[in-house]
Each structure stands twice: as C-alpha cells, then as structure tokens.
Length: 229
Image 1 (cartoon, helix red, strand yellow):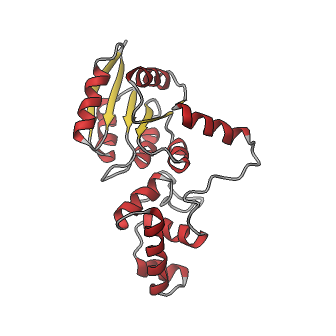
Image 2: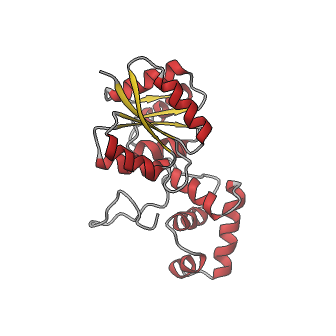
C-alpha cells in the first residue's frame, strides 16, 4: 500500500518540482499540494494523508503553527519538515509542535524517500548535521539549560519580540510592560537589526518559526494556537 503524501511549500516552482520528484518514488502517492500553512491544515483534513512534507517559512500560517494544528486534529498524520532553516530555534520549535522529521532542502531523493517511509511508520528522522545537535542536546541530560531562541537578543528584546509575534502594537506593548512608546520603538528597531529583517512581518515569521508568539500557559488556555496569530 502506497504512502499518501501532501506537499506544502509556498514557492510554486520548488513545490511543483518536489511533487514531481516524490510522485516518481516507489511506494509513494502524492495526493495533493498546498501553498501555505492554512491550506495545508484544510487539505490534511480533507485528504487525510499519511505524511505531510512541510516547509516552515510561509505566508498566512507558518509551518510551525500548521504542524501544531495538524498534529492536534489528525494525530495519525506524520509531519516531515523540509526547509532551508537549520537553526536550533527552528528545529526544536518544529519538534515541540509535533513534527516527526526535519530535513534540509538539498536532501537527495533517496534521503527524502527514506524519511517519508520512516515517519509514516512512526519513526523520527533528522538530517545528519541536525541529528548530531539534537543527540547532543538530549545527551546533556535533564539538567541541561533550555534552548533559548535568538541568543543574540537581550531578555527584554526577546520579550518584546514575543509580544510582537502575538500581534501586539508598540503602544500595546508599552502599556503592558510599563515602558514608554519610544523605548519600545527603540527595542523593536534593535530586534530588527539583530535579526536582519526588513520589517515587522518578517520578524513575526522568524519569531513564530522559533516558537515565540504562543499564548501564555494558564490552566484554561488552549495551548495549540494564539487566536491573534
């Protein structure tokens, strides 16, 4: 029986090439494709694939949030991330969201096929360079320090980036943190410079890929998704 695959990527030419490549693999059937995370969630519910091959940096709904929704709605569907993002922030955010595999774009067809088959059978797979980092993290034991997203940012800058990713304006952030609007603007500008982004939308995309922008944990909170995102 063939493994049923949904391909998700926002770049049309890359997505079409990936669909063609995966469709030619033995034992695999491509049942659909999607151009963003929201469409991926919808088509997963409609088509019930065995595996979703998921990009991360996408419009509408990024791959991290899409993965979280898919895993919550269809636990039997495995998500295999295929992305250019190789930072620890993205890797651990994807795994926390429920992805079973993480490959970098540039993986050859044989590696993609092996990974699709593995996650479909409930295994977890990583690109070789990423696997060594993940193993090192867990080998450090439960006492190891948690991975901090964007270590180049100060604690205050990271806090403000988290609020930006949750959809708050500079004025709302200033009110919440008891800071002046000018101070918040300065922090936001510093964040943009350090992340090398052109504006708010790109900063939000990077932040959410790294797991920021989620609602605060409370006993009654729905931890799957921030309604403002």
